[in-house]
Image (cartoon, rainbow, N blue to C red; front, side, top):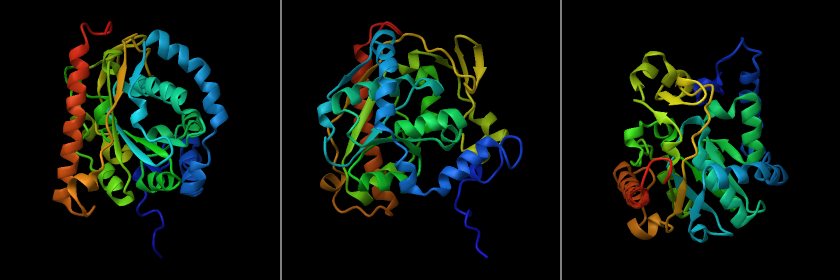
Length: 305
C-alpha cells in the first residue's frame, strides 16, 4: 500500500516533542490534513487589523520604518513578492513591510507570506502566523493563493538568509533556491523584488555554523541549514535564536522594485529547464543586489541609519 506521507518533509512525519501526542506534532499534522485551501482560509483580516495597533508604534518609533514604492505592487492582480530577510527569528524587516503594506492596501487585499514549517508548527506562534496570513513554504499553497488573485510574499533564502553573518549583511543571499522562479513561470505572475536594509543591525549574527547544523542532523530533521550564534539582549550569546532576542532599534528601510515579467524578458521558458531557470534566478538576484547596494550606500552608521 503506498505511503500517503512519502512526499511529506520528515519534520512533519516525526513526533518531535514528547512522543506521538505532542502538541507540535498534532499542530503540524492537523493543519496539513485540512488541505491547501483550508489553510488559506485561516487568514483573519480583523485579526490582522488588531495586530496593527501595537505593531505600528513599534515599527514607526523603534525601527523608524520606511517602505518605498508600494505602488509598484499590483493592487488587484496576483503577484509574487520576492524578498531578502534579516535579523534572526524576530525578522523585524517583515514587521516594517507588513505594517506599511497594510496601510497602503488595507486588510481586504488578500495577501499571504510563506514561512518555514518549523515556525508554522509552533502551537502559539503558528496560530498567530496563520491568522495573519502565513502559509507553509510549499508551492501548492502558493499556487492556491495566486490562483485566487492574491499577493504572495516569499523569502527564498530562508534560514540561510536570515542567519547570514553580520559581515554579509549587505549581500543578497537567495541560497540557490529556484522554486520561486518555477512558481512564477508556472503561474505567469510577475515578480516584485522587495529589498530591505537595517534588519541585520538589530542583532549581531556571528558565523552561521552550517557544519554544526549538519552534524546535529538539523538539515535532515528540521530543514535547517544553519545553527548560528547571535549576540544581543537579553541573553547575550545564544545559539539558534530559539529563545528569541530583543532587537536593537536600527532604522529599517524597505524598497519595492519594478515588476519583473520573466516570460516577457526571457521568452517561453520551460519551468523544468534547469539552465533557463538558473538564468532567470541570476537575473532576479542581480536586480535585488543592485537595490541593496543602493540602500546600503545611504546608511551613515550602523543602527542609526
